[in-house]
Image 1 (cartoon, helix red, strand yellow):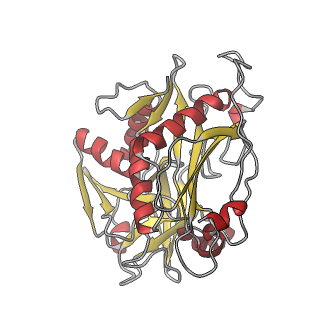
Image 2 (spheres, rainbow, N blue to C red):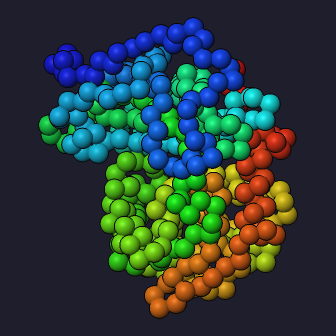
Image 3 (cartoon, helix red, strand yellow):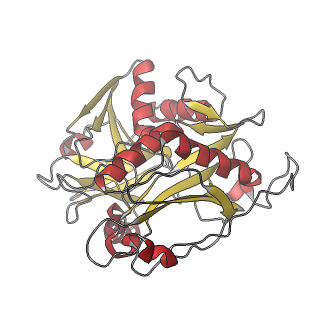
Length: 361
């Protein structure tokens, strides 16, 4: 194991200085025009461990580049995972995380699939808290967005032949963000993709590995060039059932019934998806997790997407083959009700009766 030590990244670790900024001071950001683009903050969290060992406790480092061996497992074989979660600022100034343990569990499941070491649930959540507190001035004012945090798990140790890396890096960085899509809160327009697949059976579609995302870029770019917001993928086996959008889950609604594709190994089990299913049930809707045939898009009243970055986003239209179908959007819709409810919980406006909110002390 000692042969790779000289390749390991050695971050410049720092202590957070005593109260440099007052509690009510914000970074110099135009919060009213915040989008979803990288805005480097002050600090990131980083930890390392060797294969077969455990992560212990990382430290905060000034945000900046990291060093990797050219033969790092993540660079050569795509051995990497990522997560996405948010810290929100409530009206009374509390800093809130939404179900961070679910992200930790999902990373552990992904790490097992990708033969990687992973942090414990407590370590993962503590890393988020430290990152959010260190970058407190970058957390937007209430109602202006959130601090989007990106936990990464990388095979950072060097390998030549195809094998698990001998060292792993767990890193969390952050950026203030708001609307994921350029449309903002306007309804999305989707294109049903038939030439490319997002995932295949018995593959890695159900884990958040980095290697799942670059392959969708070509189809996504082609769709955006034609004026669409994103791509809706079908199952690779039959090309008859809905799977998910490039970076979020999909729901359809007809009357009081809401349906979403079941997580059968090719679909990412989204945390917002899971939460929306539970909230919708509490609100009296019938929720079905099942195979959803693409033809059901024609009869649906509403379609919406869910995800950490997108929240609950209404779909205004979907193009499939030679047909374009439009859907209900705006006030009075199921989508709007679910959006307001989950956002209210995340912001501390609606009482959290489920134990989903973790307050950052």
